Amino acid sequence: MTTSPFPRLCQGALAMLPLSVAVLPWGLLAGSLAIDNGLSPLEGQAMSAILFAGAAQLAAIGLIKGGAGLLTLLLTTLFITSRHLLYSLAMRPAISPLPLHWRLGLGFLLTDELFALCGQQPAAQFDRWYALGAGLSFYLAWNLATLLGIVAGSQLPWLADLGLEFVVAATFIALIVPTVRHRGVLACIATALCLSVLLTALQIPGAMMLASAAAMIVGYLCEPTAATPSAAASDATSPADTPPSSPRSNLETPT
Image 1 (cartoon, rainbow, N blue to C red):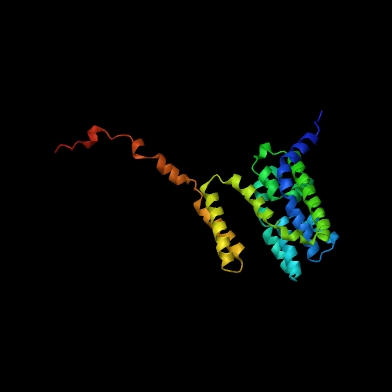
Image 2: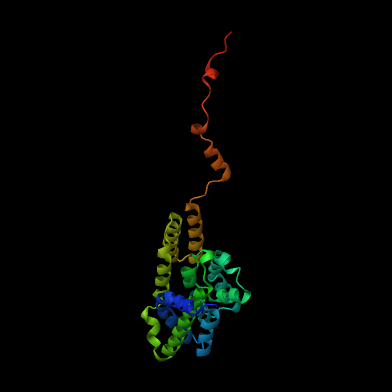
């Protein structure tokens, strides 16, 4: 007799609830900005339903307002969402054994929030229904928030002036801080923070990309490296482990 997956779906949804609530202002902003920048309500909602990537959506809306071409939109979206490739590689041991429809579904629902919730689980402990419940609840919350933003954006044109864009930074801060357990992660965050502020203040083109690349390099260099097998073997053969020489060998040979 198989047990119902419904309780595990609910557990995943409840675990994602704080992040779903936190993303509501972000979705409101995405929906209202879509209307303010000339997108129709259907286009704004379709962007959230199909793209399902908050940072990429906000960037795309700004590029659409500036008259950017399709190639620029695609490349920008690809670059911003490229971190999901790292997420998928990290979760590959847990996801690969699943059937294709599960891999496709969880791949579409993979976000920063879902990775923060399920990405650290060992493959043996990964629960597909738990992850599905978390991902679906977050997807629903994001699209409902976008719908509210679209409605409010057409009725309340001053909504974009409330500073809701800070929610983007606040959400990522809440996701990153619990992961700071090693000096490499701390060095990466500090480098990204300082360089992004400095390069943006100096109005250097591509400030975010430069800061991100430098932060990854610094974080990698600061991570402790594992000892190589040859080094471990040489360390194992220390002078203390060498057997003492025989007293006879220290005596001079008689002439």
